[in-house]
Image 1 (cartoon, rainbow, N blue to C red):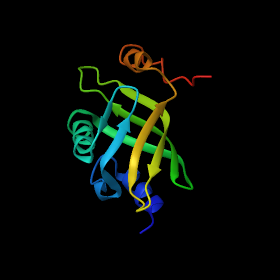
Image 2: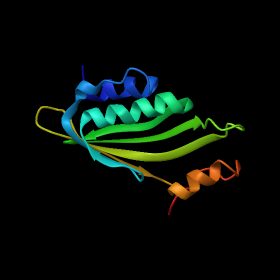
Image 3: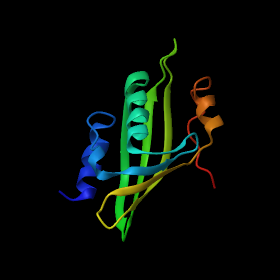
Length: 133
């Protein structure tokens, strides 16, 4: 199966039953809050989302491959497990680097908002994710 198709299916059921075999063992991951290496650590991060976030959902707006890079545009949303259970939303994009075996060797996420904007959504529901110019 084509890696784009696998990613589309993974995103549709995110964070459940992700296909970790498409990642290199020492994959490099980075987002505005994390930076690490290794597919095991990546699995732990997904397990954290699965365990602690309520109703996590990933909407993929675009996914395309350009040579050895795959770019996805998405919105991740969830309810935070605090008494008022606010719905949090982060839009952004990912750049996935591929090696010659078509395994993902880097997964870098970029957000259209700051981590502070995400925290603010917990207290000011109308303060949804804003696009950074």
